[in-house]
Each structure stands twice: as structure tokens, then as C-alpha cells.
Amino acid sequence: MTDQEINEAVARKLGATYAGTRTSLITKKEIQLWDWHGFDVDSGWFLGPSPMADFCHKINEAWAIVDYLRKQGIDINIFVSERTVMISRQYDEILADHEEAPMAICLYFLKLRGKLKG
Image 1: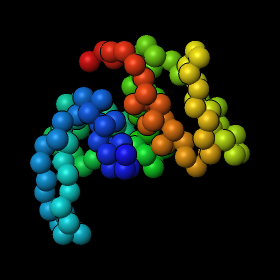
Image 2: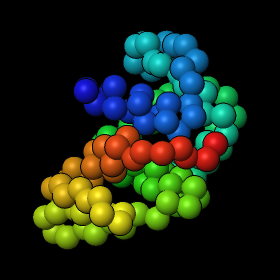
Image 3: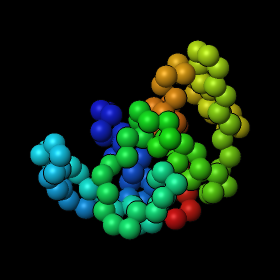
């Protein structure tokens, strides 16, 4: 999966839906818009369609996944050292380079089985 595909899979699992595209006034490039249905990606409520969050690379956006899981009653542990990050829950565990923490959180989230509360 590409980073974009992972971001989209995370967004869908969080309940977001694709809402079309628009052209950026600054870059003049097409931007995908997603309707988050009130999901708080970066400590702020989206009132309408917004650009895709970069869950794979930005720790503040990936941390929204951790907050979401905790609100669902799924407590995961994240340990970060100078060189590694470990994400664990019961018997599941992911080890990654500390710079890859956002990606590790995304992959862990996508790996979770079972239904999450809407």
C-alpha cells in the first residue's frame, strides 16, 4: 500500500467518506476532500469537507487515532525511546524506528480486528 492508500484506509476506518476534489487557490493543484462527520482529527471539529489528514507522517494527526481508540475503550500502550517506538495491546506488538511512529500507529490501527464503536 502507498502512503496515500494507508491514509485513505485510516480515514475510512475512522468513518470519513470521500467528498470530491477542489483546486487549491495557492498551489493550483487538485485536493481530495473528505467528510469527517464530526471526527476531531487535530483537536478541532470539521464543519464540512476537509483535506485528507497525513496520518502516516504527522504524529499529531496519527495521535488522533490513539485518542479515537481510547474513546472506543481500546487502550494501547506506546513506548518511545531515542531509537524505537513500541505499540502494544495485550499480546499484539509493533516495533519501529522512532521516526516511523506515525506509520506504525496507522498500521496498528488498520491491523485491529473487531468492530469499533461508531
